[in-house]
Image 1 (cartoon, helix red, strand yellow):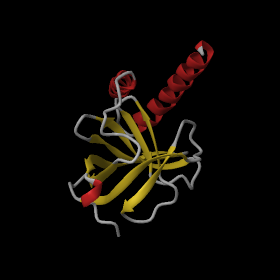
Image 2 (cartoon, rainbow, N blue to C red):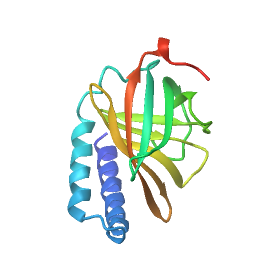
Image 3 (cartoon, rainbow, N blue to C red):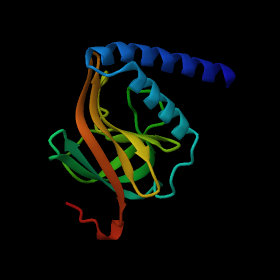
Image 4 (cartoon, helix red, strand yellow):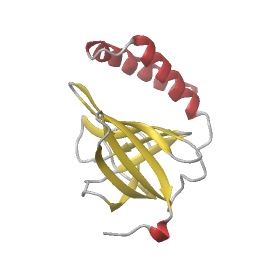
Length: 168
């Protein structure tokens, strides 16, 4: 287990180092990357909020840089494994409302949440990533790929009453 933790830490540091080169080209400061990495690591050790559980229904809204709604989805959480090109214990998301996606999936680590909006592509990942709280989710909407990353804006999520969520 200790070897796995060392390998994962080395891989994370390597990814961060490569990310910092790409970030520098995009105007992101090294200190910002380090601070976000520290926050991510801290949230990993915190308990996942009770509102994030199998069968729960969550609504997500992505807002672009102008503050306009770019997209919105309602997902139901499952415990079914989902194959993805990114390593990890990915679980399927059931689309309740929103445009059809191919195999959306999520992974939660403590209070960190990453949603792959599609698992159909390898080396190209449209995703939401950020932090869960007791009342919802706040994060960023981005597209990571071999040539770098594109930031689309912020994304917010809240648990919703499944009884009142209309199914399209």
